[in-house]
Length: 248
Image (tube, rainbow, N blue to C red; front, side, top):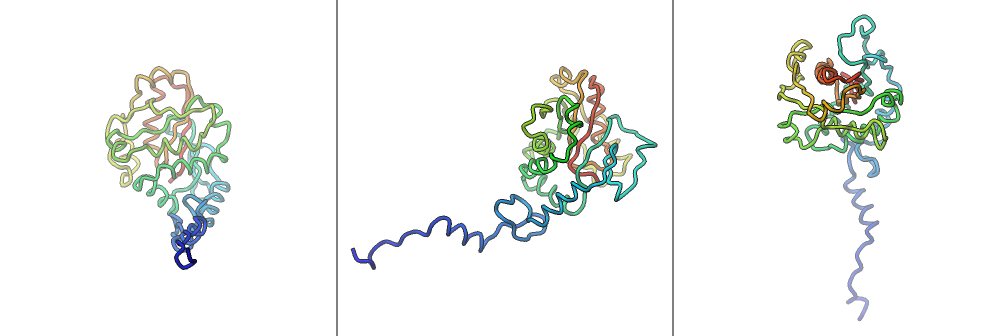
């Protein structure tokens, strides 16, 4: 067979991948700039800013507010049933975009990866003193529509493969389909979620005398986690520490 009639050899796959990466680079979900393929969601600059913000955040050890941004009054007035709030980031435009992808674009693994990003900055004494982690549950209709609970995925990334605390999702049930808290003031948020959570039969068996890490994605007034913590404590839980990805 002459050279002219020989079949053409396919391009090496590695070369095709380089061409594809050059022509269609993956984009950062925050700023839309090209990112490396081994950076799953964010470009290097956005990831560096996010990590630096977590590492340098001047959080109140009780309410989790960033004291460099706003002052808190928790040393004078503490109106929550749980012990403290631990939060990693401030709810800003970057976090708003990340949470939009998590909640409304099906990126459950993004919530898990944010948990993994925050894990090295979680005080070991916080989780070490607790028996298990409980994600704030969604109402079953919202869970069915979304397909997953973002708080659970964040919790699993945060806890990782640690033997303690493990993530338990059968402890609490959200009994009422509450309306979104976004446009409600503080008192309206409390009324909206009052009595919204109930211990499951499984939860009633295991919470007595136990300490719990209650995990949520974003905390604003704390009304939702307060209602969830109240249900845990009413079932005999000995104490609740709240952990959230973001604090608004």
